[in-house]
Image: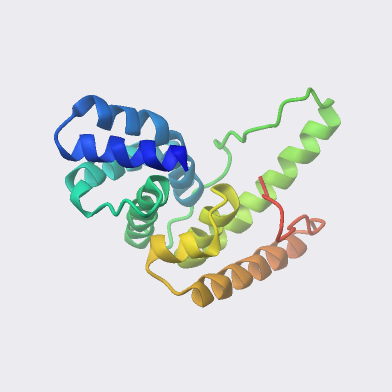
Length: 194
C-alpha cells in the first residue's frame, strides 16, 4: 500500500509539472513497459520506440490517471493499446526470431540445460507471436507482468469474463502450437512461461 501512495504522490507531482517526479516514474516503470512492448511486438527497436511513445502519451494524459488504480496497470494499458495499434498496422508481417536474445535465469545451469531452456522459450515466443493481438495482449499482461484478471480487465476496458475467456483461448492456442512443433507442452496456466 505504501508503494501505491508513493506512486500517487509522484503522479500528482508530475501532473503539477514536476519533471523530476515524472523522470522517477519513467525510470521505475520503463523496464515493465519495454518488456510488454518487446513481448508483443517482437522487435527491440520497435519496443524502444514504444516505451518513448507510451511515456509521452502518459505525460500528456496524466490528468486521466485515477489514483485508485495502480500506476503500472495504467501505463501497461497505454502500452497494450499502442502495441495492438502497431500490430494492426503491420498485419501479416511476421518477424523471424533469429535475432531475438532471450533472458536466461541465473544459477549457472549447464550448457545442456541452457540449450533446452532456450529451445522452450523460443517455442513459447513463436507460439505467442502467432496469437491475435487481443489474445497476445492479455497473455503478456497476465504471465509476464503478473496482473490479476481484474487489473487486466481495467487496463483493457474489458469484463473479467472476457479476460478469462481470452486467456483460456490463448493458452489453448499456445498448447496446440507447441504440440504441432513436437514440443512437450510446457505451458502451465498457473506458472509464468518465461
